[in-house]
Length: 143
Image (tube, rainbow, N blue to C red; front, side):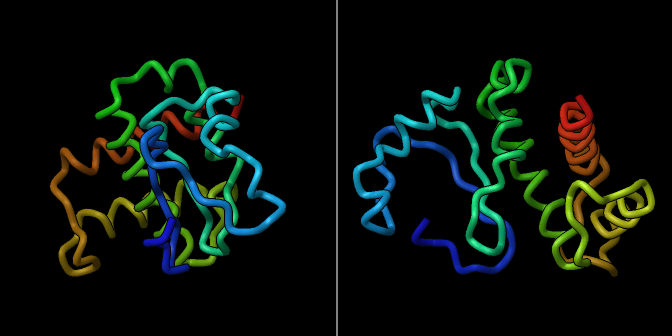
């Protein structure tokens, strides 16, 4: 997480070859990757950290769902990047992901596809992937 600058949501992927370093003594004896594996993570599983530097356990639990865990790693990565863009969009508007509604989603879609609204605008096919990722995430979150 050395690349985390405290702006927006941080996204990374578990990597068994790159051990996470504890940031305080209390955590120094904890093997974070082993603990994550015990919770259903595997090499390549995405994990999110909120802008305040704390993990969002609810979002990270999504990647342990059997239906999501069974996706190809490329699909998981693409979904993770889509969800990160969404979370950062919400963060700039002061909206928690669990408080977003259809109106916010419509504003996101317009922002994502409009060159005037965003320097990060995308084609319709990329926006479809974003919306598919969000649909899967929110369908899971409702259960």
